[in-house]
Length: 228
Length: 228
DNA sequence: CCTTTATGCGTACCTCATACGCAAAACCTG
DNA sequence: CAGGTTTTGCGTATGAGGTACGCATAAAGG
Image (cartoon, rainbow over all chains, first blue to last red; front, side, top):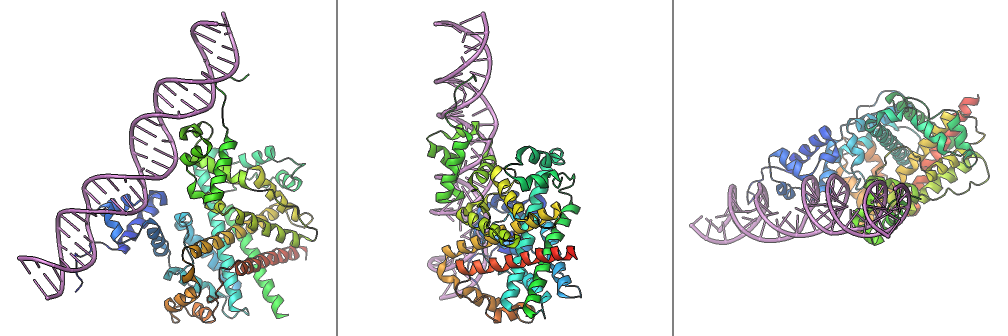
């Protein structure tokens, strides 16, 4: 038998409680004291099971990731596009993912499962293993970045909804000197930034799709370039 | 004349001091108290010129960005590739950029200058203004994400250099069950993660170049797709 | 029953951001 | 030049958050 007093909680419990708080009130609400209180324990009790807060965050990151959904039938483009969208949805469900300072390469089971899923989408595609990883890394980087952007914007929107609508395009018009930055000025004049719905889910979705399209197009071109 | 006591410092001074600290010791070392001390002022004096720490960070973000370098001659691909690499170098010079919580769309002069530079690279390319913005956004997202990744990895490397070399591939071999994640297992077996230099600057550069190549390839394909 | 070992947790200490209010300085008016 | 006005400098204080330390407590072994 194991010696010593029996633990009343373990790391998984703590992680769960922390995730619940983050889901409900955001990552900022997750403090050691708060987590402990939520579990009916004293603050310092947590430190027997978790080295420090950073470790807790790492545990949360891994535990909160959901399972990757099964890929649809079709060719690799459809599959990979689906995968990218799935990543985006998963992140959207837990926006605090993006706020947790990343600490290293993925090694948790859930993260690896996603990686496997992406590689599965590329099954049969004539690319070197290293290239496949490159493709997936690049895509994943893109998706995360886009999610971060959309999150940031919607955050700013919540803080000050009224100001946002036409304001940004207007502000740019004031700041941008056509002499110093002609290319930008032209785009601003074209009204690209004037849309009422720059941060509509719909519109951000369109941006995302466009970027995704570009990237997949690039992968396709690269494949073609190899076979010829 | 203006009434009242004359200010002995202004926001720009504060920003400069804060940037100096961040450059020397990282963003974590930047606290209001520390900045004040570095300037020979009292902590609370800063609040007369800066609303709060978030605002300071925003100011830093803008002030620390360097000017975009002039684009090389050539076609848009060369220019845009150069631009992306320049962004990466700029970020590498001030890694704390990536740690500062982004607060909204770019509006500072330096950031706009970079945006203009990217759009200039696309001058004459047959794309709608909105599409150009999409391209630049996507590219910028990718570069930032890649920079973040490389930064994270090298961070982990500094903490524990010895463990890293072959360790990651080894760890994956243990964790990855070929039955549950066949596609990943195949890649792991191929030794993609075994490189001694996964985090060599050189190797990360290669990853970056590959992703960049894919993306640009995608833009090219998109352009071609439009003209036909 | 006493020793060993591991856990629960109260106390205490630091570091930070920041609200508040008073004092000092510079300008304006009479 | 005296008082009023305005704006800056900053000391004090508050409260949140992370975590080191050490003792009390519980469980197992001898």
